[in-house]
Image (cartoon, helix red, strand yellow):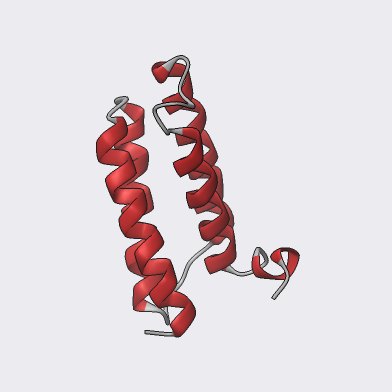
Length: 100
């Protein structure tokens, strides 16, 4: 599936955002942790709005919950906690693709 097609779904939108935010909050990518966390939070919140509601896929619901919790940690510049939650979201997104 092409990346253009995959980002049209809630799973694709969230998956792309999680990968981008994970890359942006790597220790080597953060020049200014406060500004970086703020940008990452904004980006992730935008993706959560774009993903829209999901009702029929429990794994996607869990991924959304993990991403929302990561946003809260990013708000307080708790980078490691946010990364842990984003990794959990990524794992749930794998399951979401499988329809689990």
